[in-house]
Image (cartoon, rainbow, N blue to C red; front, top):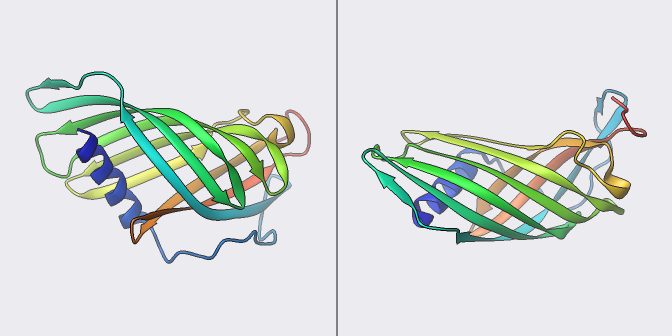
Length: 172
């Protein structure tokens, strides 16, 4: 299942990726509820480790993995998380959900936040959504919101985090 999960994640990223932009923060381009939208770009390494035994039954296989990541570029930090997967008997159809806590420095601000992943592949057609969990920001990243896209090029993983920081606790 690990091989299937990795293949699915790679297919999601490949199908949803555009051209990779170079690392470097961009000036604010838009606003989200009064907060400037920024971009953080860079590379990351990921290690997936099977956690427990796969649950195989007719038509599907369930799996669970631990996630460890190292982010480089505009986001310098590490992440730990958990992933649940389900593969089907139909080639190219699978799903995964994951949560990861990212801790580090983003745009010169230190803190942490949580990302929520939802990936669905229907007969080879991928859909991947990764978003910041509301109210999960800590330290100087309190009030963070946003989405993250992934691209895999030449075996390397790249991210583009589009984010905003609300002004003060409970700001919308």
